[in-house]
Image (cartoon, rainbow, N blue to C red; front, side, top):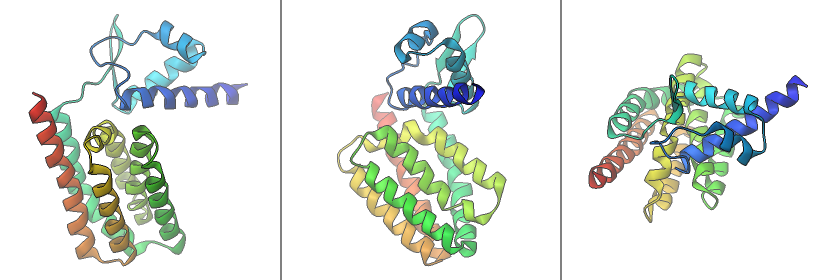
Length: 216
């Protein structure tokens, strides 16, 4: 019975997370747990567990007597997330590329193809596959804390990835950049990989600054 409840909570977590990432849950109103549970066809127990997990991941905030709210998107958060990614990801990816086994290399290739395949589906799926791809370039280094940091930052990036890919032409550019990143990683070319990954992350940050700036 506990396995079923846990599986249900995981599914609720995924659904609510997608609603946050795609902007279907507004950030200026409390989440109405009764209505959301009814919409999802579940009890409030798995929903509460999912909301608590989403708060731990930084996508929700809770306020006493007011409930859960979606964490607002902001330029301050964009800057912090992507500056941290710039500091951590390039050296971590180089370190991992130098130590990757054949299984690790195959996993990275498969993660790229899943990301590429998701490009024709919904943007929430693209955001998840983007996270998986970037994490696959770091995980082979065997540094657990580094991998966890990269994954956490990628989770916090997902709403911004969706926002970044909305303008026409961005998906095509992202595909080319990811292909080049994978090629450099597989070639264990540390210098090229550092330059490409830095450019990729910085380019996204610059685009988002322009988007958020024009929206204010």
